[in-house]
Structures are given as structure tokens and as C-alpha cells.
Image (cartoon, rainbow, N blue to C red; front, side):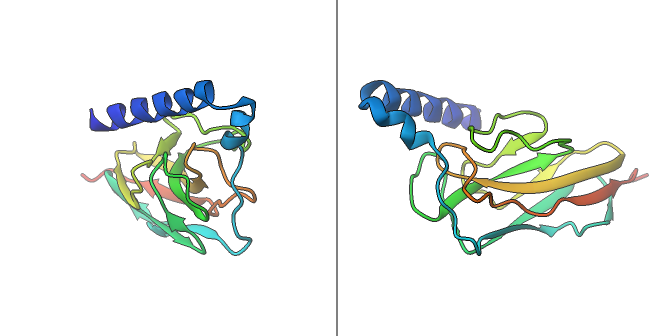
Length: 151
């Protein structure tokens, strides 16, 4: 419930900023610059790991800092976990929240996922205060894990 309220508050604040700001307000939702040395990665599980569900996923980041969604601070962003996503989303637009794109706008650096048995891909994508990926994108290499039955 708290996450839904926070997401609603972010959407309302962004809409108010657009409505009340001058004509160049749309520029504020553009891609934020990222240092070329910034790197996102998955700390755990390891690529190729065989795990049971629920799976704890730990996010890593070097060359930038973490800031919650809605906080516009240079060289920061928040994580989005791409789960079994066949194609990358439009990197010039705010990331949608779907079953395949998990938002961590509170600045979280890990999560626990309930995944069905089978093979899954995981990838981290950092985005700015408005959920728009940075330029250049701060995107981890995808990893593949296999979830086996815990029985």
C-alpha cells in the first residue's frame, strides 16, 4: 500500500511540475547524463546459478549514487529490475511498471522475488528521478538463473 501511495505521489508531483512550469518543463523529463565509468551489476545470484524460489536479488552500482525517485540529484538514480524481458524498453521514456520491469524508487538495493520453476533472465537498469534511463544507459549484463523446485 505504501508503495502505491508513493508511486501516486510521484506521478501527481511530476504532473503538477509539468502543468505549473514554463513551456520547457518537458526538458526536465529528459535523460540525465551518466559518467561513462558508471556500472550496474547483479551481486547475487551469480550468472548460471541454480536456486529455489523465493530468490533474493542484490543490486550493485559503481561510479554513481542511489537516490529515490523524485529526487533530482546529479550522478544518482534508482534501480529497475528487468525480469524475463525479451527486448529493452524505450530508453528515452520513463520506464513503465510491469510484471517484467520492477521499480525500486525508494532506493532499495535488493529484493526477493517469487519466480516459477524454470530459466529466468535478470538485468538491472538505473533510471533518474523520473524513471528515465540515463545517457549513456547504466545497464548491467543480463544473467540467467534456473529456479528449481524446493521439494
